[in-house]
Length: 86
Ligand SMILES: [Zn+2]
Picture 1: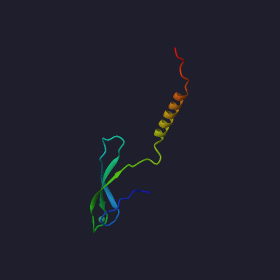
Picture 2: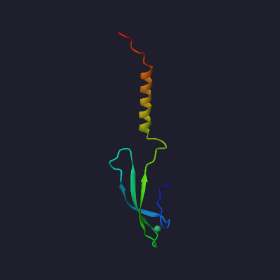
Picture 3: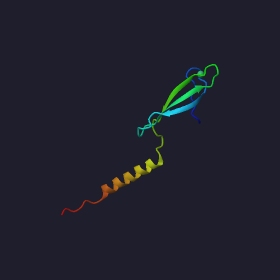
Picture 4: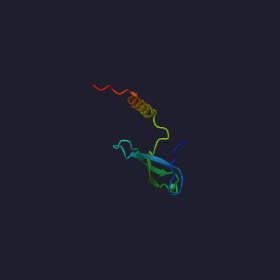
């Protein structure tokens, strides 16, 4: 399913003319302004729609593997026998 932006004035589908990444220098945050032009010849309004990442439904595979490795490391550290006092 494609993401489609509709005109806030007449609800006609728009064309995204260009976008501007507004969080370019901020790690872990993603947001863009989409400059959209209405395709209705009687309207032709141009508007800005801001889109942003909210959360993962399924995190990237690398993140899951890193979390699993971290959990295994913690478990191994907890199960290691304590050293004998000198
Ligand atoms: Zn319109």
